[in-house]
Image (cartoon, rainbow, N blue to C red; front, side, top):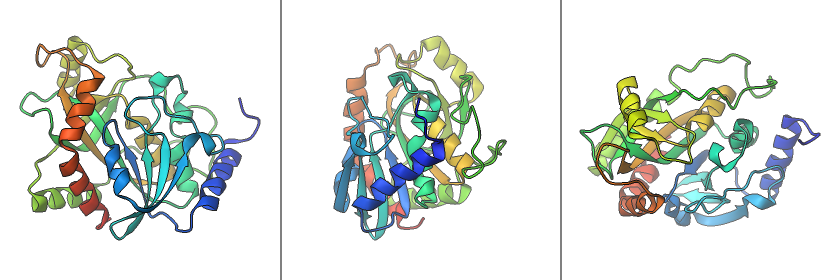
Length: 275
């Protein structure tokens, strides 16, 4: 355990990042498994490996590059996380969301969270994109458990409209303009690393979930706590367990992500021009 307070750690990480860049990022993007190619389209990029940033966790998952990339995407200045952190990697919930809190300390107010997810809704297909309207988290742990720093946010905070309605409207308009099918639905968080059982997927469907996955929700909670406005988009990389008879594997997740990467990239780039 570090002797420094959370805010001291956040300020040190923020100061290190700012010492490496000459622009102030307006929008932050977190890229899910297999979706990292968008980061390669950032112009005049400054790449900072996570391991170099004070107090930052390090991503250990295939398909996650493990670096911050700061530069321009279209006309907007962005900070992109190419690789994120997961509970199943052994990190505590509060460490998972450390980068989100760094964004807030740096003055970023807009956040796009993306993920690879399992499709629960039987009327949809692998390869679909889903706009997250809400989420379900049934695991007991929370990234905001423990002492609260009032510099970041309130002890008790509202969770209505975690996924900013105005941003969701922009996403729908841009998807329609580009001719991209964009589903809308609820994402349910499971801790992993095992995929969900068929029974758990049936439960998720009954509970109202349209997709399941192992990320995004802790980050969205932390973002809500510290005042970032969030847009969430899921890439349905496979049908969830029990929907078909096929076994699930990470290779399929990465392959499907690559197949729909162009649609995904076009949508994200058009959205950020309007945020």
